[in-house]
Amino acid sequence: MAEIKPLNWAPKAGVGLSVIRRGDGGLTLTFTDLSDATLSDWHEFAMEHLFNADRRTRNLYDLRLVKEIPEKTIRAAVEANSDPSARNIRVAVVVADEKVAGAIREVSSLALAGTASAMKLFTDINEAEGWLARPLDQIP
Figure 1: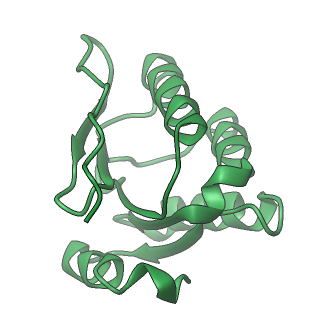
Figure 2: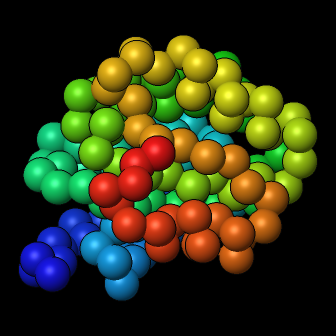
């Protein structure tokens, strides 16, 4: 396996996001809110991560504590998911309810075809981990 990249992320006061490096080299991003501070921090981190993406990877977005996804967050997520580097990422998104799931489906449907990540929605984190564990050559 290739060497795991450094995380290049640090927690910030007032930001409802935590990021850890996964054992498979991908990321687990856990959101507790989608405030302007959180959205700004995530967007900067995500775009930097995409700029440096040089291999297939697995990411897990844990949104179970998020109750609503604002329109500006959807737009920012569509931008990130339309980046050509996103096509190398398998993303499992874990949500707690249908309202948030609907917003994630909107992100998926609005991203540019051919560049978007392989994304799948889950309500069970163990099922999400199982999907992420599949060989990367089986994307989606």
